[in-house]
Length: 289
Image (cartoon, rainbow, N blue to C red; front, side, top):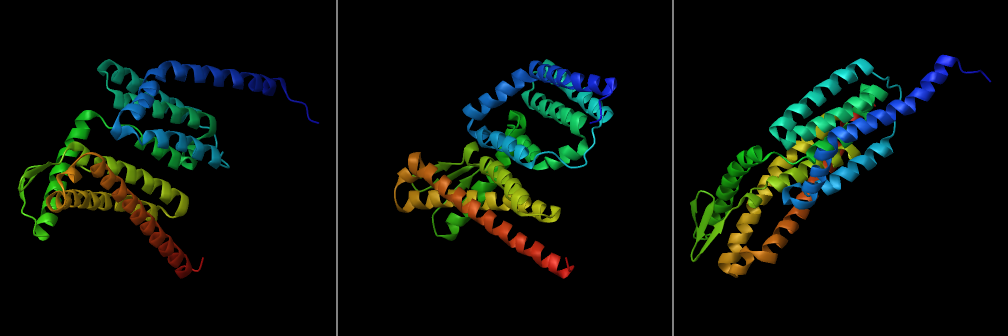
């Protein structure tokens, strides 16, 4: 059996120590944003999907394991780490949680590149994207995106009600019915369902599909699906409020409509994934592979 040189032995002894030091430094620097992220997952309705995506990303990374042939890139890793730490310092001064959390993932990516190279990072692309999607958007960006979606959903829902001969008058994001008014709130903008469907698109595409073009198409298809079904939810609420009872516009029945339509959206996304999977198979047969 070949004996290890003294230099090799030194490297073996130093590797666990450097890993422990790097891990402790990471925890000290990013303990606050990590804890606040988990707290937001638990407390904020628009961030609740992180309770699923976070652990799921870890499990997927564990199952994919190490990438074959990936080589450590210490210099590139140090550049990424320097940028992440600088962003952490600046966002800490500004008390901006979103960029602080992004810097946390940047630092984690730097540690992966340092130990296993860029190839390992690409090997873990799906867990990484899921983790990024689990980060709640900043309030300013959330409000900027939510209000136009509220208006668009209100217009589409009112148009559907009008097509079904329901007397309706639209004023911004308020739909006036005879004796009733439906206020399309931020929660009804479709932004939450859009985030969840984008995450599902990434997950289904990563597990079922093999080509980048089909994965991108699947994720993009989540956008019109979310918008259309959110408009359908508003239409159903107005239709049931007008023809059945006002109770359908609030409380348990209103939330039940949302869950049922999300299941429908999931089924549509699954059907789209199946169609893209068949298209991939057809393309492979066409190329003779």
